[in-house]
Image (cartoon, rainbow, N blue to C red; front, side, top):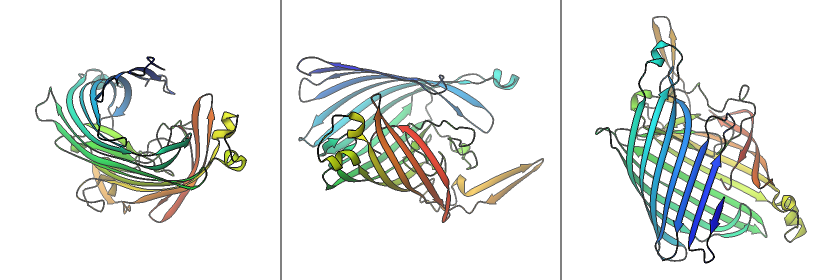
Length: 357
């Protein structure tokens, strides 16, 4: 929910995202001062999530983040943006036995700086329908305040081009990538879509546990590299990722009518065909032997066997989907087939709430 003043010089926005498990909710509060050419923004963010820090121990992390940013427009389409951030993470071990019950909390306090160059000359033709180009390149640097030997550096970019084929029939393309380095790098999990609502977690798990993760690398944080439809999260992982997406978006009813429709559902209903390809890796390149997903470890009593998993670093997916606006939400339905090691995988279904890619 948000509010503006009459001249739109000030903007206040608050939001909440309720997780399906009712235990990983997210809260956001933002204030913007847009009165002069230099735009200023202050954001408070709170999030709770669970993750494994090794094969056995699971923690629940409470994150509080404060961000202050300024944006300077160089033209109507190009801008520079800088952000200073403060982040407080408190990770609590979930008690499974006496050992985990007695584990102390893990406290991390980070300070960071981020710089961005942003270009956007797109025209909005409808919900999730654009024409033109937009891109962003960025660099980030973080230092753990309460631990002198922890730092993180991230560079990356996201480029999107929307070609208007005919009226509101749009061919959308995106290439995005990022790399992290430092003494506490970032791990990217390749696969799935943003804001995935998995209604069949038992038969279709959100996270792929069969692909190994190198916990010895002291990863500070984790992030998803999407979209890569046809797989669960973690079909590949590493401190770098690169992904390409292409979609053909067709608002069929509006297109056939030749004008906007009075019904919001019919006006925004879209049929989509898509293809994705990407990889995530650690080291100099995706074919590097350092990648943990390239091996499979089997433990049997005192014996530990490491097997070359013979996994190709690049995976792909293709399929079709539907888009509809219901109760104010833009809902995405995707049916996708993944391609791994030149073999087509069983079909996967995704229900998600998000715009664009």
